[in-house]
Length: 127
Image (cartoon, rainbow, N blue to C red; front, side):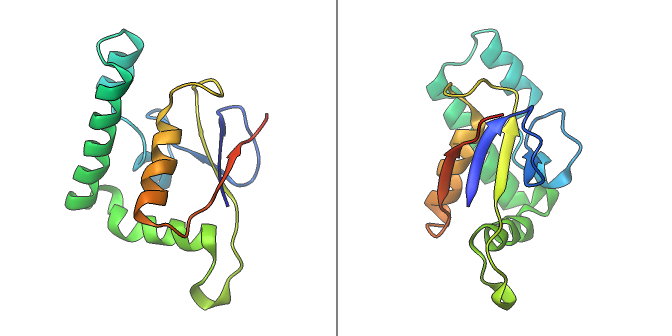
């Protein structure tokens, strides 16, 4: 199951998808610094940010940045199970945005479900 949470979430299934993160698996889903600061400073609307974020994911996919073409299906396999009869495992996408606000972690969930309908979203985890 796929979940989302604020950065302080410390479960073992945590995947940091912030631009500051060091996890290569999380970096492939992070927005750019320009997007983060632009949105924080009011230069992007939610709609513009959404378009830019989905364009970024598409560009990373087409250019296989961070080995995204191979990594995303592996991530999906972890969440839904499948390969080698492995049971599904939870993954919680974390970033700094407060719960129940506009955030790229929720955009990512929509993108993953759109492209891999077998992915299920379990909601926002508490801290």
